[in-house]
Every structure is written in structure tokens, then in C-alpha cells.
Length: 575
Image (cartoon, rainbow, N blue to C red; front, side, top):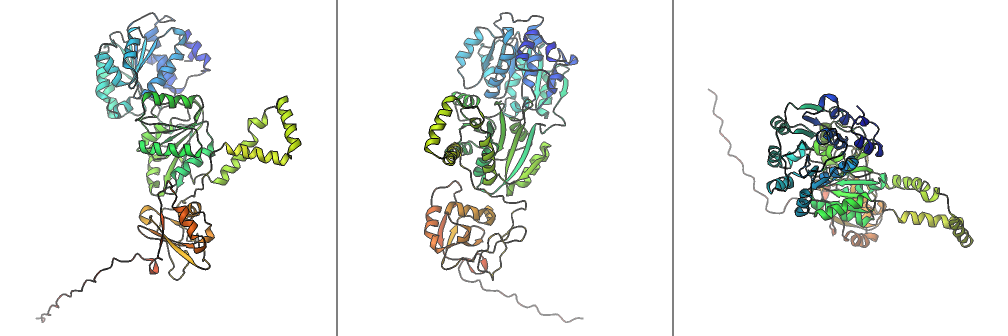
């Protein structure tokens, strides 16, 4: 079945949006055998299910007519788990039913309930809303459900996870028994099966998610990061991919605020989404992303649930998702409607096994690598600059006139250098990051006879064996083996924050709760001042005495316990 076998007014709207062929879920929902009955659909996000159920309920609410008749009571009800998803559904159905004279009203938490009741009293054909707000309108008599011909539960599994079971049951029980019920869910846990059995009649099961759980248009990448370098790796990933729109997921509101502030400080046009924002603030953030004023969104899972951003090409998991389902929902924000996307997980060494388990449970394969390096990003910047529209577009006569004036005053090399500086000034700064490597964290290996740096990496090579000439000073860092201290990331961090070279750093001795570092005396004062500046990693350095002999943590001082000897037992003579 093609789109153009649907109602003529809907076909016209689809043609304007260049919908030429249905997706898998749309074909399944519009099949002849599913027409008119209840359906239970398992489909991933980004599969086109909003248009699918928008077309599926057309026969129930339009019948044989091309346009809706005036009505004060809604004919169809769409229930979604979050405000963002409900408002997105309203936008999708608005263009789909544009030529059918259909009145669509959204009822979501955080908006003016009195204004919603006024719109409902003026008449609505389709109502889209969140469970709590819809139940409130029904209880107060603002939403009449006696004429409902179709009820759609979108992302039903998420609504159950968020604790909306009682609200959903209330809504379904208030609707007529002869209604059509369409239930869409990314997964099919027992709760969804029970809901379908209780409130649907002979529902046809449609599964279009099996076999492609990872979404075919998404490239998964697992990025090894050193502890305390998650934010730096996020900056480099955003700079490396230069996606038109990107979303960065964190697990807590505090992490969202901190990372958002970091990105803004680095020069990114970024907005945030979290549960503590008002609906007006959330709408403002979403609009900034849609009209291009912002290109990065930092969000929690709940706040970003169901949002559909145009040209979203990159998803970054700054914090690993809690489970495989969350990984799929997060990643499903990209790779939509046939467009390609990248989903990148930032994986510190201690969480590698957890990341591998999440990917395995989600049924996807990821390419493992270190974070993009500064050199790789600079190479891409060079290519992007040569392809910049400013250099490709045909200059105007005024442009040529100004160019001749500049060439009369400056050489071509000077103008070229100025153009490069101007181009780079628009870009956020690149961060120096390290790849902690494939091997798991290991205890540092030392040769007590060698007074220089004696730590080794997993291959057994010494990553830093500089013998400092002249005087040297010891510094104590407030991080040790218990917090995954390792010379592979400590060394570049000390160079960057302390503004010293590798040749000015001597021995690095790592203990359980602290690390001792040897710094050339000539740069020790500047090193201490630079390390004292505020930093996101919270690693502090202070002057200290040298490490104990043989690199061992000293025992606490105190009186040595006396040895007690057990009395010797007398041997009994053998009989």
C-alpha cells in the first residue's frame, strides 16, 4: 500500500513533504488486514510511527469525507509520555491534516491549563497530551471522551516506566468500549502485554523492531577516555564531527548544568534541557535548536525523551546510559528518516566492561578508538576551510573592489594568513586529550634501582624516563591508584595544566591515595602557580618531600607490637 491510496487531502500533505514511499512500520500499520482493528506495535524511535498512526486513525475520524465536520467533542486522543513528544506529535499531525480542516489541541503539563480548557471548549477533533494533564481535564469535565473513535498510546513502555499506569487506565476506562486502540512501544515488557490484554480487543501484533535493534542508520562508536577527561573528549568530538545539531546526554541535572557551562565557555552555541526548567525555558531551548541559533543540546534522559531535532547528526553519551533500552532511546534521536548519524559513548577504563555489556544487550557493534586528537581536528579544519562557502561562492563586484584595495596594501600571504586567523577565531578551542589504551588499568611497575621515572604501560615500555639535570622538586597530587591514576594521562595533564614540557618532569610515583611527581627546580614555582588555578578535574598539587624508599607507602608510626610465642607443647612418648 502506498501513501497515495489514502485520503486525498492527506495524500496532498504527504506529497508536499516528499513522502514517496512508506517506511516499514507505516506499511505494516496501513496493511489491509490491520484496518479498523486494534493493533499492538513494537517499533523503534525514528521509524516514522507518528505518521503511521496519523494515517491509521484517518478512517476512524474522517470516514468517507475529505474534511472534518465541526464538533465540540474530540474524535481521537493521542497520549505521549513527555511534553516534548506530545508537542512534536501535535506538529506532525498538524501538517498531515492541514487540508482536512482538522483542529488539533495539545494538553501538556507545564502549560496554561485554563487556555487549554478554553481551546477544548471551542471544539477539537484530535487531542494530544501527557497522561497527567489529560486525566486532569477529564476529571474537571473539560475533556469529553464519549465520542472518541480512536485512542493511541505512543511509547507506552516509557509511560509505564514513568509511573503513569493509573492515569492510562483511567483514560482508557473513560473512553467508549467500541473505540479503536493503537498501542505503540519500543519494547514489550509484561506491563505492556497486560495493558494490551485488558484494554484491547483481539489486537494484531506488529513487530517491526526485531532484527534491527541498533537502528541501521546509526554508526556506534566507543571512545576510550582517561578519568577526568570526559568534558575534554566531548569538546573534541563536537569539533571533530561538526554536526549541524548534536545532543549530549548526562545522567543528572547537575552534570547537565556543569557540562553546558563548560561548552558555552569554550565557545559552543549550546542550550540545556533538564527537568528543573519551566516549559517556557524548554520551548525556548528547542526553538533555538530548530532555527539554528544553537547547535548543541545538553540534556538528561527524561528531558530529551521523544524530541525530534532537524539534522541531528551526533549523539554523545557523556555518562553511560543506565541500560540498553536507554542507549537505544538516546541513540534514536539521530539516524532518523533515512539520514545517517553517529552515537558515541565516552568510556573510562573502569567502565569498559559495563559499556561492552550495554552494547551487547542492545544488539549493536561499536568501533572502539581513542578520542579525536588535536592534530586530527586541525587537519579537518583545513579541509573544511577550503570547502567553506565563502571561498566557493562567486564574489560580487563590490567584493572584487575591496579585494583590490586590500592587495594594494598587503601581500597575498598576509591576506591569506589573516583569513586563516579569522576562520579559526570562529571555532571553539581544541583540547589536548590522551588515549588510555586498550589494556585495563594496571599497577605501575618500578625498578627501585632507577631514580628516574619508572612507570610502565601495558606493553612493558617506559612511557617517560627522563633523568632531570640539576635540582628537582617533588610535588604531591591528591589522586592515586584508587582513583585510576595512570602516567598515560597524568603526564599530558601535568604538561597542559602546569605549562611544562615532558623533559621537565622526572619520576612519577603512584600510591593508593596520592601521586608524587618530580619537577625541575627551575620551573617548579611556575608549575605550582599554574596548577593552583581552578580546573574542572579538581586535581591539586603541592610541594612535598620525596617518595619513601623503594616506592612503598610508609606504615603508620607507633610502637611495634610485641611478638607473643605460644608455649611449646611437651611431646608425649610413643606407646
